[in-house]
Length: 408
Length: 171
Image (cartoon, rainbow over all chains, first blue to last red; front, side):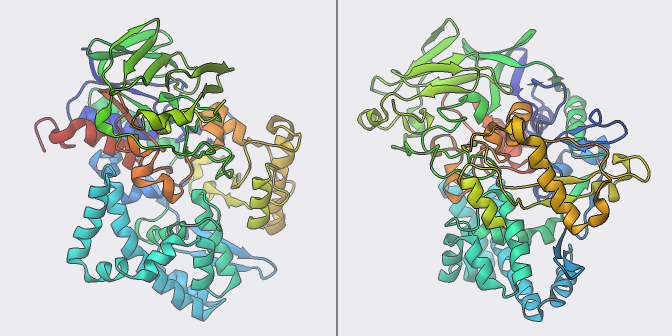
């Protein structure tokens, strides 16, 4: 097999995955539809002459908490970061002053104290409490999220950290995690300006202030004091550029301007067909939106909510709900394929996975449908429609999330 | 204002009064703009991808972008009249240009029921798709959106298995 792994789509996660694999000695190819790598980590200099604009992400925060930049030695590839300090400023209307959020908790508290000494103290406590909790949460981010591993990570941490143990076993912590973050902010601070600033910062992850079980969207901001918020010099896309160099240094290849038309199961391996090449590989990595295409409404499959813009749109996408869960070990074996369609029988019932190539979106590849489902391809936007979601109840719960969303 | 904007969002309308984050990165990184000039980046949450007020994103992009700029000018009046050019991305543009379906930069909503072992769904939450040798990565998988990289690293970990991240044969 010419490739060990082919990654469909050169978004930053795809590239990072590819870099680690190449570094470990695997033969890796990355296929990308656009002419630029990085997906939403991308800076363009062709929009206004002389200027460089980020057309996706802008500030890098989370990646600085991970070991990724160091492990892949991206500084060696020319990646430089500029610390944003302060990383946020909230102007208080009519005063000419505002609240600054610095890397230093102390300096931030001083800035808050000008508006409310009481909240300056509350902010210090907030950072202490939520950093401790979220350092634990963060550890779970660095491994696949099985329930056992998730709880094991926190338990292990609690074993050695009495403070962490105290916080995690506090019912008040549980209550705040389950609460809407708007409420948690309200009970934590008294000053309306600080409250508003924290609301807006917390809203950046998507869920709205009144959404239940969103308390940690507020709590998470405490972690920015730990890792900082930084700008890649030259624009967000500098990260993608460095990742490509890293990939190539380790022998990996990237093919730009190669929209994937089809991913086929052939024998024991896969074939990834893009505009003018076919890559044969043992394994394929893709993103979910491409892999399973768009369900009824813009990609959400039964039970998933995409949100109508940046955030959620009520239940428009999730009406069919998550019917039942299937078990991973029931995964079907591929039996055969013809005319670009691969199918496989599920375990002990009539349910079929149909693997259909040719979806025309993103680095787009294929859709997975159940038997009896209508194939709809409306201008590359809308694909699957479940015929009878209830059916899943009869077949050991296969349908679940990989179903379309609109029962017809 | 945030709540007003969110109400508009739930009603599938463009926000009457959007909330904005304004960022001038050229102030700390001179490589982004010619000397004496700057870039202003405005980002506003809660714009509904789907509009039910009879308008289309392609039809209202300039007007909606004006709202963001106007808000910045309210707080920074010396910004008014200084704009040389601009580049607008509506939720629809994010989908068309970057493949961010329905304009959601996080792929899927980052709500607790769609994070950890629930992201994107329990069945496929550990980076393995339901077919052998097919893997998932990206913002729709744990731990989610943002410039993060943990998902890509975790996927690599799953693929390498016992070989680990340190190289062939090394755990």
